[in-house]
Image (cartoon, rainbow, N blue to C red):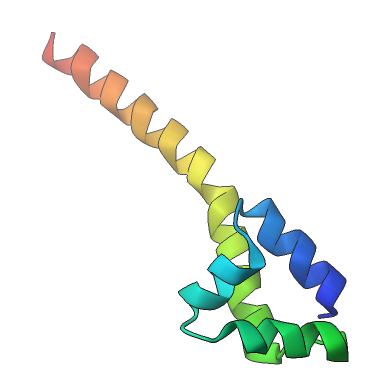
Length: 77
């Protein structure tokens, strides 16, 4: 993953690059190096991809939970 794609994906999560790197337990110097190399380490890219996929599922899960809750409320009435 190149640095531009990394930046866009982190932004899509509503995070700043520094927040994401801190979340991983890395230093700010790490993403500065990635910027200079224009390449993000493979494991970091995989982690970011998984977070993006999970974030895409969350709205669906909350809709599912709301639907289940409404059905449960109707069943108890």
